[in-house]
Every structure is written in structure tokens, then in C-alpha cells.
Image (cartoon, rainbow, N blue to C red):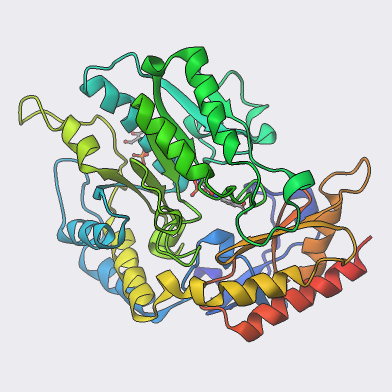
Length: 441
Ligand code: PXG
Ligand code: PLP
């Protein structure tokens, strides 16, 4: 096997994504194998996975159904053209996805990542309005601190300054809602914060500025993940839905992180009881094992495209690998695993224990906020003066040395373990963090 060379002697060629390349290449952290809740490192240590890889390995690592499905599919039908040709497993998987998708979602468009799901959804929204005779509705509304992947549409509606500032003028015709983070009012809230639902009313201000007839869609993460876990204030998403409906604006939920059981319900739309018009997913759709994304849409959106001569392509969009057979096989193995083990709702059984254990870190050094929902947690640290991100990064390094994988963004530690985690492993993860917080400067 190619990966058996566990001590590569030249790390230079690979320009690593979202990585401090120079720091990493001086002291590499290599993961060489994985099983269930753990990684194994090249120096032979076990690492408890506190982040489900990058929020994607929801069923844990190297699960047999998924591995077997991929192996069998690779030997049966490796690739088939995705344009003007089909293969059965892509249709089977779409039906299985619609079975578990929030009610109202009736069609699936395949992509290869969250970033591509976002581009697809934004293009669908604009094209939908045009197909309905509302060609002036082209404007896209995102939110400050939002993360919607790294492609141009996604960083345009996104609201993370480092992901935007180097890349020129981005898409035009974009505006942003304010973010909902409010430490002064909501610090150390368990679950959904009390304060901030009225921030959704800012959409009315944006509508008043641009006029609803120019706005195609609002895109938000129901729970903002990448920016450091921002939980929506009580009633906020409901209000956003009402205002969108009132003005004929499509609501897109970016569920790349929240989809597939992360909140203890299959999707955030289920958890919050709010139905968007489009849902973007990726990550957990294949347990992270093969790159894939899926965009769910309502019948209304899909049907708006289904007109004109039948021999014509209805939507000029798609990827070489849309519905790739091996990705679909991985997806079916994933859905079987989720179903057999009840993983799409298992988070709800663990959420209380998770919440109480996580919040036991209140009062530890540097901690200025703790946030949680479902099986997501965040610990916000006071930044070192003049050296933002440094404190959290040393926590990350110390945790790795101790045997736990966590994720940091800015000075926030984010946690999102695989949904198979046990209560004992939750305790173990939080104990590691307690020790780490006591060790770092
Ligand atoms: N939308 C959302 C809401 C995401 O969280 C993407 C789109 C993009 O997905 P791809 O597959 O193109 O990366 C994401 C991805 C982190 C982290 O630790 C978060 C993501 C990816 C990598 C790391 O915060 N989110
Ligand atoms: N660039 C070139 C030159 C191509 O031919 C293609 C696809 O045919 C792409 C980019 C897009 O690749 P993908 O469909 O994998 O996104």
C-alpha cells in the first residue's frame, strides 16, 4: 500500500491547505491509520478524535460497511459519465437521501464538496428566480463570520475576513447580515442563547436598502461552525424564515457541518423546526470517506427548471464527478451504518452529558466562554495580547501530545466528536482539555 511509508523524508512538495506549512514541516504530525474513535500516529500513539476528522467522520473511522461498499463498487463500476448517462447506484442513493432529508426536500444534486454544494445552491437560487420570470433577483445575502467554503461564491457570501481579504473584489451584489455572537449577553449559555433573535430583523433593513425584487437568497449556517461555533439565538432562525417568505427570498441552510446527526437530529432543519428552500451538505454524506456533497431542494425549485423542449439541458451546471459511483457506494454504506446504529439521533441521547461535562471547564484558566449544542462544543479563550490565535494553537499542540485531536480557529477550541463516542470517552476528552488549559501560557 502506498501509505506504508510512514516517515516521508521530503514534505516540501505538498502545499498543505489551511495549514501553517512552515511550522508543520518543522515538526510534522502524521496520522497513519484509524479505527472507530481513534487515530494512530506515525510515532505509534493513539489519538482520541475530538473533531470527527474535520467535522465529517460522523460514524467513526474505518467502518466495515463503508469500506466494503467502496471495495465492491471499485471492482464493479469504477466510473461512469455523469452527463447524459446514469448508473443505478446514483439514483438509489438519491432516494435514500430524500428518505432522511427534512420534509419538503424532494431532489438531490450531487457535488464533490461543501464548497461546490454552496456554489451549486447559489447558482440554483439565481437561476430559479430567472426561470420564474424574476430575473432581477440576483443579489445574495450571507452573514458576517459565515463560512461557506472557499470558492468565489462561497467566500463572497462568507464573512470570515482572512478567507476574503487576499482575493480581490469577489462577487458583486452581495450583502451580509450581522453575526449573532454576543459574549456580553450570552457567555456560558448552555444550548441556544436567549439574546439576539432580533438580529434577524436586520434582513428587513437590507431589504429596505436593496428592495426585495433584487434579492435571490439568504444563505446561513444554522449553527456557524468554522468561525468558532456560534449557536443561533432562540427564535432567530424562525424569524429569518418568516422574513424570507414574506419577501419571496429563498432561504438556504448550509448544513455541511450540521447535517447527518451532528445536532442529535438528522439535520438542523429538523432540530430547529425550520424548513429552508435549499440545503447544502457534504462531509457526513459519505462519513468523509470519499469526497462528496449533495444539495437538497424542494419540488418547487426543481420543477421551475423543468420546462422548455425536452431534449434541452435544464440546468447548465454539474461536475465530472457528480454522483461518482464509488462516492455513492460510500454514501450507501454510510447511511446503512447511521441507520443500524441510530447515529442520526444518537447525539440527542448524549447531549446532556456532553453539555455538563463541557461546561465543567468553566473557571479553568483563560476560558471566557463555553458554548454547546447537540454534539458540538466550543471553548473560547482570552487571546494573548498582541498575539491572536497563539494560545489556542498551543492548546491544540499540547492536546495532540497528550493524545487528543481538537480543532482551533482563532482563539476558539471547537469540538465535534464522532457520534459513536461513549460517555467515558467524552469525560476523557474533557479531562485532556482541562489539563491542557492548566498547562498553557
Ligand atoms: N459550508 C460549511 C458550513 C462548512 O462548514 C464548507 C461549506 C465547505 O466544505 P468543503 O468540503 O469544501 O471544505 C464547510 C467546511 C473547521 C473546518 O475546522 C470547517 C470546514 C472545513 C474544514 C475545517 O472549522 N467546513
Ligand atoms: N477544467 C477543465 C480544463 C476541464 O475540462 C474541466 C472538466 O471537464 C474542469 C476544469 C472541471 O472539472 P470538474 O468537472 O471535475 O469540476
